[in-house]
Image (cartoon, rainbow, N blue to C red; front, side, top):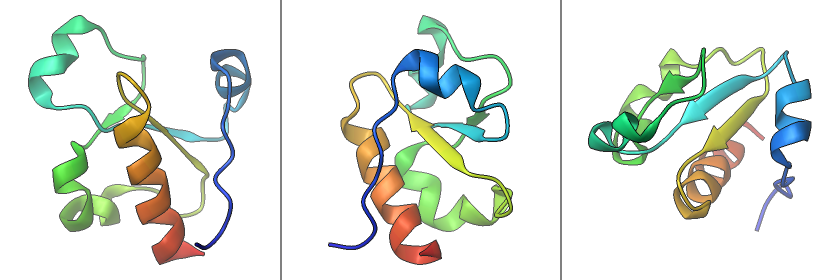
Length: 81
């Protein structure tokens, strides 16, 4: 199963100023709001675009419900870990 993926509360995530916030929602969902300074890469595009992420910083993946962000976190952990 690989490296355990920690779950962070919004307050914990906000304190992680060293991290890249990766928004994996679809482009049409961004109208609902977006975390300032986040990087937007839709989950389906992540395999092709993961080189855009700063590998020296931790990544906090976010989405609307948590399902896609969990998949993104697992994908990244399996390739970096």
